Length: 118
Image 1 (spheres, one colour):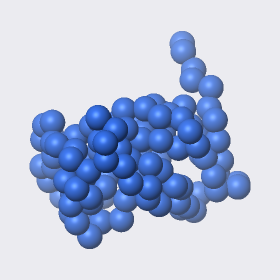
Image 2 (cartoon, rainbow, N blue to C red):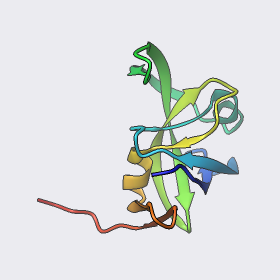
Image 3 (tube, rainbow, N blue to C red):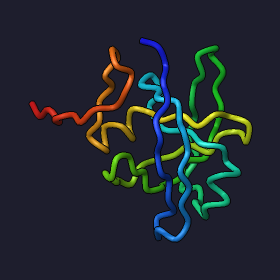
């Protein structure tokens, strides 16, 4: 599947600070990652630090915070990683699942998903 981007609104938990961004949809990434400077500007604070492994095998400790994510009028609180300031925004699987969205790989867009319970 090729990559594509989606518009997403990211907001502070109190809803006072909001920004609309284009983020690359990355279902291979567990969490969404945004430039740390953007999250700082929105007043989103790190809640904790966790170790992440990159595709090249590097392990890096990174801050994680909580923010509102909104796509097509559907909103949910999600975890966001404080990335380096030059990183492109990534929309990860945790955020997509929270918003009950799935990837349509043929049309390269997000579509409503029905959650499955076993």
